[in-house]
Length: 161
Image 1 (spheres, rainbow, N blue to C red):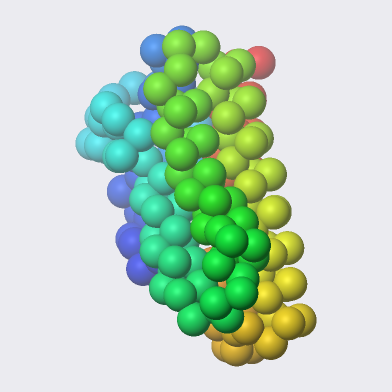
Image 2 (image 1 turned 135 degrees about the vertical axis):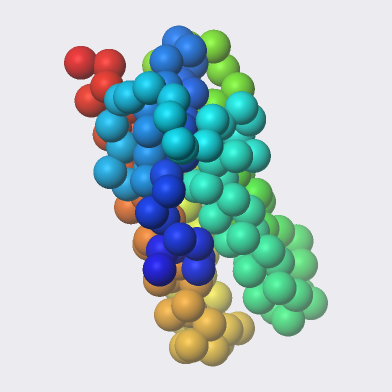
């Protein structure tokens, strides 16, 4: 069983900015260059499992933050939602760029937004806005997503060597 309940065995093909393809199992874990074969051809950022996982995280954050105190509407609630939305947005924008270097930069920005989100979850926890189980679930999910983003970035870097 894989991240977010997906079976990671089949893998996906990630098309990087220069048009070459990198085969990735899961969210970018165990990526290696190759030819199209039995794996899915990624034609859009929507086909990337790491983007799909980031979108799931956005839903989790919106559902969690709906119960934040009203006085946090324009402060922590807004900030945590923007950080969450930034993650799949930057993955999508990077994937849509022409050059691999740009793609890597946007993956790095997505990674930074994920760190920002994790910090804001910790703040919400310290302020008593979220339960310990919710914090553990989101931090666990986001940590796994972070590892997969990092692995995807490293695989693309390695392919470029």
